[in-house]
Image (cartoon, rainbow, N blue to C red; front, side):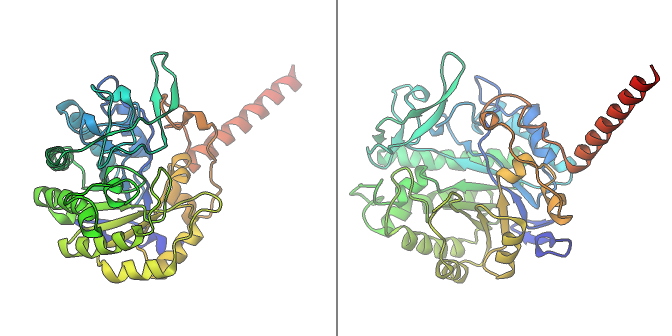
Amino acid sequence: MKNSILFNAKKLGTFEAKNRIVLAPMTRSRTAQPSDTPTDLMAKYYAQRSSAGFIITEATQISSQGKGYSFTPGIFTTEQVAGWKKVTQAVHQTGGRIISQLWHVGRMSHASFHADGLPVAPSAISPDAQVWVVGEDGVGRMVDCPTPRELSKQDIKDIIQDYRRAARNAIEAGFDGIEIHGGNGYLIDQFLRRSSNKRDDEYGGSITNRLRFVMEVIEAVSDEIGANKVGIRLAPFITQRGMHDIEAIDAILLASKNFNDLGLAYIHLSEADWDDAPVVSVEFRHALRENFNGGIIVAGNYTAKTGAELIDSGLVDFIAYGRKFLANPDLPYRFKHDLPLNEITDPSTLFGGGTRGYTDYPSYSDQISIEENNDCTKNTSGNIAITT
């Protein structure tokens, strides 16, 4: 893999990525409580993975209303911004680039996060889904989402301003750009799809109306920080959480033309990575490339080989890796030298906790050093046994 296109530099927005391997956004729920503030441990975690072409952070709520899972970070208070500054400084000091993923979960939330017990959404429709919530006993569990309340027009305007402020806060915190989370059944996705958006005003009905919210969000953050620092994540083929809509592909392809006109830095596609998952068609990839001149990132169950092949096709520019990067902080090095990959050792450490399953996965060089030391210890122990 040494000469693979994965290791070619590529300009993205305002910076040049040193390779095409991206750390995908992954919720890890390690913030300081009760303020949902990023910690020194989080700074270490991201810095360990700074050999990526660039990092996209875990989803970060733009307001208290936008929260849907326990211990996830925010970027709407002074304390949270200060916490994120530690993260960006640690990544930059190790030669990395880092982008903040901004998030409003909409109806994908729980009553315990809201004073009135109600999440919000385009329409008052239950997602028939669950979120991870830590109870009073300190244990995290998957719990059902309640039926949300429908957003008023003033609510929508307020949320757009929350996105604007969060984008400004992200730049103040030292991020190299932002990514708007517009997929996976969260608020923007809820506006895009007919299954979750039954509004009869200018934010519902036709595809153009259902795109209105995301376009107003993108316009607000682009006005605040510049469109060349803005990307968006979309999930056109994922239908979980009540997101089935035969018009989803048409809506996203139309959106991509609009994003191109605004000069967005990139589009990031979240692709299903489970068995019998929907396949992303080559026709869709060609249509997206034709519509959008910026960078295209994909995240799915890619290997180094399949990722490189897709980039070679000219249809995408970057491959985002999640679980592989979680367990292998030096993933680009391992890919480049065809080295074996660590596996996730304990799924219970994915959400919440401390260093275990978070910052204790070794780089390849550390792994070899540990193994060599263990061998030396065994040999020394054996010699002692023989001489005594």
